[in-house]
Image 1 (cartoon, rainbow, N blue to C red):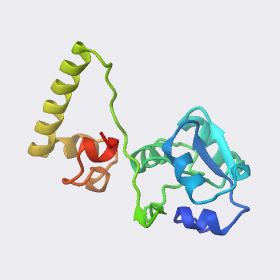
Image 2: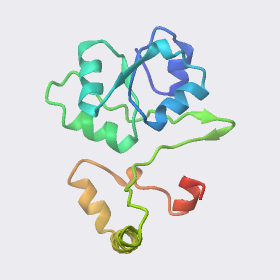
Image 3: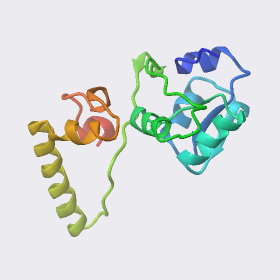
Image 4: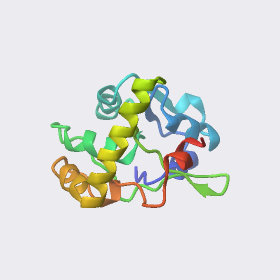
Length: 156
């Protein structure tokens, strides 16, 4: 079908798109005016992949890292990761979904979050994070830009 962007989905109302319930990609689809009748909602990435494999959906949208991992771990050979898939433009800005870690709102959660962030920063600065990610088929393109902060992503 030649689907390489959210705009391709907008342009073709016959495209059914698999998306995880509660994912921010639903907001993207809604913002672009994609009809909810085109959604194939699922409770897991495996269910999204099954929808694509069975033909119930034509494409799955998720974070780049999630989609890449799902495609690589799919043994049927009936799905492919679209390397040149472009993120949507919403209100004049390109948007990107990132995966995240969450912590309880408590003193212990704050301590855990700080320790996590410190460890993550060390991995980023040393380059070790990329080595770890490459073992799972990810690339430097899956890392967030250096100038993106938690505050930017969460609007805190």
